[in-house]
Image (cartoon, rainbow, N blue to C red; front, side, top):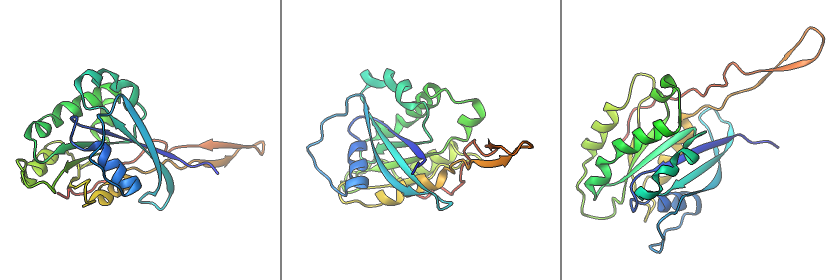
Length: 210
């Protein structure tokens, strides 16, 4: 049976824990032995959307190193949602969210109105390390600045190591995107045609939740 695919792209500086977050969510495992991601790859998991529909979430893990950022256009296009990740113990990784967001919206080639309301969340990872330099208040302020009436950017703080809030963050992503429903209309000659007035995904507005 055909299943809809929800493409989710993880972006952010190298070393913030994107690969670890994905593996904690998919496999419930953590290891310190990860190597830096080269290019991008994806893993899929069946999830349930906010309207109760089961879809395959395709989670793309992208390289954070600058030398790979030119490849973004190949991986960003066709995305349904974006997860921006920073390390709460690394202020530069938080500052760089602005550039990551701009690059994603530019390289994904979204129309202006669609880009304005594109589903995004931010994740502050590595809260298990007691060396915080980015506060929850700072993260909420960033999210509020980049939100609007139609699309608010939720923010989460996670630990890929022990799993804190990881499931919650990825569950929120599935809630933010509604999958188009194709309907069958009968024509005058008795044949059927597909209508897709809801083909454009509708974002689910949610209050930022750092």
